Length: 242
Ligand code: F6R
Image (cartoon, rainbow, N blue to C red; front, top):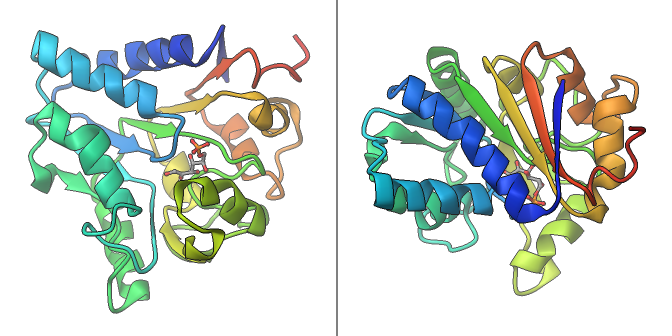
C-alpha cells in the first residue's frame, strides 16, 4: 500500500484530487467509483472548481457509487443520490445517465443487488474512492462481513448509526439498513484511493495498514489489493508506526 501523509484535511483533499484528476485526464472515459460522507467533500469541491476553471470534461466519464440507504430516494436530502447530485454531479457537467447509485427505494431489494452486481461487472472501476468508518468499515461493509461478499442489503452497526446521526435531525431518523457494494466489488477496482482524516479515524487507519487482514476490520482487506493508495492526514495517521 502506498501511504501519503498530509498535514491536514485541505492537503489531504489536494493530494486526492491530484490522483483522481490524473486518472480522468489519462482516460476521459474512465469509470470512477465514488463515496459519500464528509471525507471526500474537499476532493469533490476541487473537481468542481477544476471543471469550472479548466473545463476538464466529464462528458465521457461513468460513475458507480458505493452505497445508498434503504428507503431513501432522490427527493430526500439525506439520500446518497441527492448528496452526489448536490456535491458533485451538477457541478462537473456529467450526464446523469452516466452516474449509477443503487436504488434504495427498489421494491425488490435482492433484485436491485443483482442488477447492481451485473452493472459493476460491466463497469470495472478504473479507480475506487473510499472513506473509512471509525469501526474500519468501507462502504457499508461492517465488521464481520465476508471478504467474498458482493452487493448486498446490510443492517448498519450501532456505531455507524451514531457516527451518521450528525447528518440527520434525530438519531432515530438514520435508516437502519442500506444497500452496499461488497468487499469483492471494491477489490475488483483497478486502483483504490482511500482517504482518512481526523483523530477519530486513527484506530481504524492503524488496523487498515498494520493490523492483521481480518473480516473484523473490513478495510484491512485492502492490504491484499495490488494498487491501493492511502491519503491520510496527520491526526488520522497518529497511531501508525512510522
Ligand atoms: C460512504 C461510505 C462510508 C463512508 C465512511 C466514512 O459512501 O461508504 O463507508 O466512507 O462511513 O464516512 P465520513 O467520510 O463521513 O467520515
